[in-house]
Image (cartoon, rainbow, N blue to C red):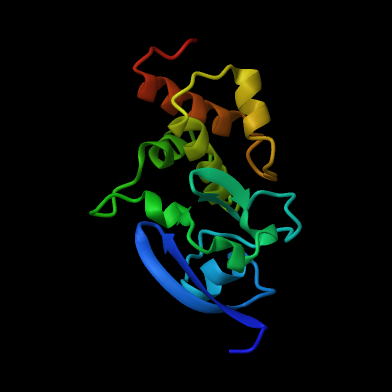
Length: 165
């Protein structure tokens, strides 16, 4: 194996995998091309739009500016990893549908993965804090309010609290 390629062992959506990758390849490229995880979108490819967002060891990252070789030993979660055993949607995915927080859908997987990080913190955030936490995403269709509402609704539901009006 030349210096241009390296074996990467990691866990993707709960499954241990290994793949020889080009050392210049982004995590986006590895996830899309080698594992067919097409929820990971190629948008700007410079870490600005959030469409490629995945969770790495529980933390949201733009996978377009994260090298595939850096995934060695990491646990990576994509939107595909949120589905239940029989293909049922997670609560946050259902909330995006319920709140019509989806239009073209291109930005949705990245937004949802950021929302998962927010929700798994177990903290209660204000609207301003949620806006800031979701600010690394660009959406050309929705105007963001329905997305914010979907995350907020799911946050309160998980916390077992009534949704403030």
